[in-house]
Amino acid sequence: MASRSDGNEIRLTRVCDAPVQAVWDAWTVPEQAARWWGPRGFTITTHSKDLRPGGTWRYTLAEYLEDTARGRATFVINRTFEAPRARVFEAWTRPELLAQWLPPAGSSMRFLRADLAVGKSTPFAITGEHRTMRVRAEYLAIEAPERLVYAQQFVDEHEQPAAAPGADVWPTMLLNTVLFTEEGPTRTRVTLTTEPHGPATAAEVAAFVAERSGMTAGWTGSLDVLEALLAAS
Image (tube, rainbow, N blue to C red):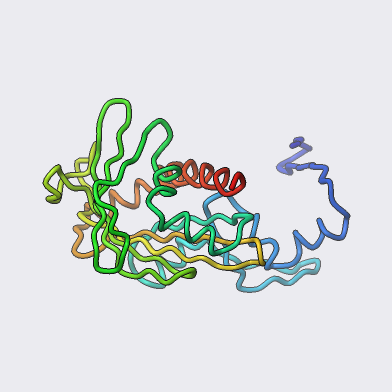
């Protein structure tokens, strides 16, 4: 619960069903704070944390680090799942499981050809209330259960490159890198990084950057479904 005090101070109060030491550690141990601090869909990297009066905590978000360190625009989102790494990796690489959680809310997904292998392409269709869009994924790396890399682009019914639905300008192809990090025997952190792949104009990159908040909302919805799917299996 939030309450406003005098001046420019805001007080936030929340009662947690946990020991005082555990809550203290969650705020003060950088590795623990990184799991929950900030909005869902963002990661943080701690550069220094001086836990004392007058000390400072220096940290950034992953997208900023990627943008500045690599000199190109990226989208980053992550989620920790209460499931073994092998099972989470399987949910990203088995077509029948992907189709259950990947499509946006209110739409369905079907594979037109399920060739989930390095060097192969896998076209699929996502159908919503008013339209169907076709996407082709080309798998560049499948390293179970640690890493998945694939490029994707919108295509027409003949699998030829097509314009992005509803967008006047958009990168022709996107590169997705998915990392699966084991945080415990039954706990897995998934980090997805997406960036324009191949030649892209300044306008296309700008459109990609402008859409990052929408991508966060879309991926958050899909990951919510995946979380429920893993919990039920």
